[in-house]
Amino acid sequence: THTQQASFVIHELFERMRSNRAGVIAGDYITSDGAAVSGVSIDCSTAISPDCGGSTACTTAELAAYDIHTIQCGSNATGAVSSGVGVQIINGSFAVTCTAPAVTPPLCSPDVGVTFSWTERLSDKNIQGTDAEGGNIDEALEAQTMTINATI
Image 1 (cartoon, rainbow, N blue to C red):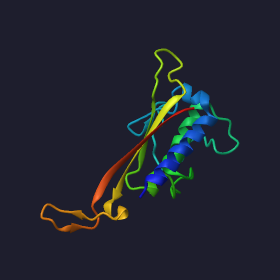
Image 2: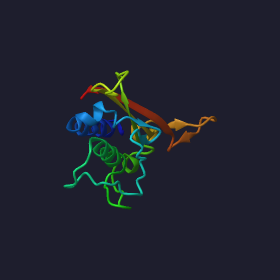
Image 3: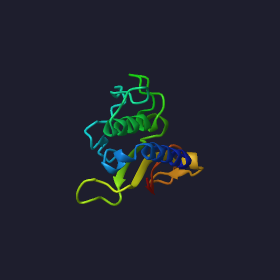
Image 4: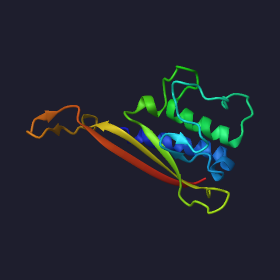
C-alpha cells in the first residue's frame, strides 16, 4: 500500500515547513487547486525559479513555492521529473491548510494540516475487486486520503 509512503511525504513537507516557519505563518504553504496561494502553480514540466535548493537567497514565499514544487515533482531540473508524489503514487496530490486561520495578518497560526490523496490498486492490498456481474477485477482502484495536522 501507499499509506506509508504518503506518511513519509507529509512528514517531509512538515520538516520543510519547520525550516521556514515564517512562510507557514505568512500563509505561503497554503495550497488550493494545485497552486500555492503565492500564485506559483505546480507544473512539473517546468523548473521552478528561483532554485532555492542551491545557494540562491530566497524569500519565505519563494522557499515555500520551491518546497511544494519539490514535494510534488521531485527534481527541479527541467523535464527531469523522476520522483515526487506526482510520479511515485497514482494520482498523488496534496493540499496544505491552515487549521487555525487568523482574521488579520499573519494569515495562519503555526497549526497546519496536510491532506494527501492517492489512488491505490486493490490488488496491492491483496483485495480482489469484483464487477457488477460478480467477475474478478484485478486492477480495481480505490481512492485513499490521509490527513495529518501539526503545529509547526
